[in-house]
Length: 98
Image (cartoon, rainbow, N blue to C red; front, side, top):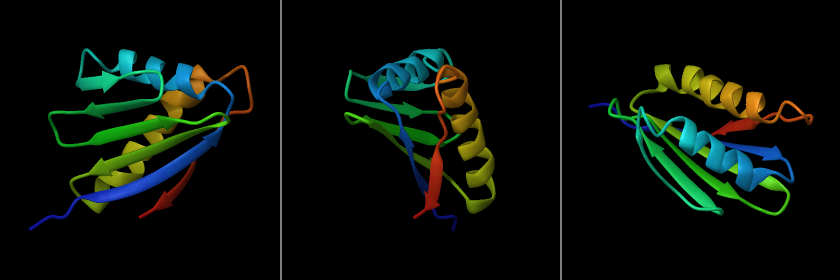
């Protein structure tokens, strides 16, 4: 039996709400998304998911995969998308496996 694997990330930014909404809109054609200005979720048919929460000066990101082998690559994909959206600032996601 496989267990879901989760990593949590945080990025310092004053544009958290904007990036949260941008990522959800970007993946809305590939996944089931739900979002507002403060939180969002993205769930892919393959089982990977992303949860986002916007704070005043941080974006909190949680990614979940079906197995540990897929966690690092999925974190990288999520971070690369967010970093492209935040290219105007020194934006980066710091990850921690839960």
